[in-house]
Image (cartoon, rainbow, N blue to C red):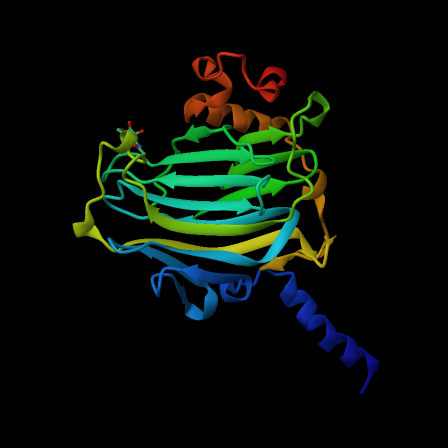
Length: 288
Ligand SMILES: *[C@@H]1O[C@H](CO)[C@@H](O)[C@H](O)[C@H]1NC(C)=O
């Protein structure tokens, strides 16, 4: 065979690989609970979780990651979703675990979801920030990303940063950087606290409630046998070229976007809740 033909044939899979092929969620995730309420559909292009009075459901990633830029598109429970919580997060194991959380608190039809975020390092959280969104998260899919590198954690929605948690180890605040984390998601009922502190109950006549997931992409360091290997992503579009996320920071434009979100859509910030911390605000709040 002519060598030009051979190299042509070898190129095809490379091109396809870099062109954002839809991720096969079934290759990246295991359904872990819910007794048939979680489903992989369309050959793994779509994953749905559902919740009824008897049970919710959930899945977790097959891989563990130590740093990465992890994107997932979610479409949340529509209509009267009050009392439902869709949790999507990274977490390590053990008593001094690390965790990076998104939680979507449902609401009555027409009333806004709350996007709740938190960061745990070495078993300690209490770092909540909550937001409304600038769109209806039930009408369509939107991309929720976690960029986690040794210097910072950036939460972003459709590419707009909503929260940055910086590494403040220099002032004694532990930062998640040595425990590999898995991705978890679940849809469950929390009408004892989620909507207006538990005042609004889940309307079970509207069950089953369903949330959907697609277009997973992880440009990440995958943990295996006590080692982390970076560079090769998993999921769709694992771009061979850049691992720029590993040193990513917010440029001026991104900082302006972040300030726009925090000014217009942030509804709770632990860093300004002086009543809650009578001994003084957490150290990381006093710096930035
Ligand atoms: C639900 O809607 C009410 C009224 O707009 C709002 O105060 C509340 O923050 C919303 N979200 C939740 C989860 O209660």
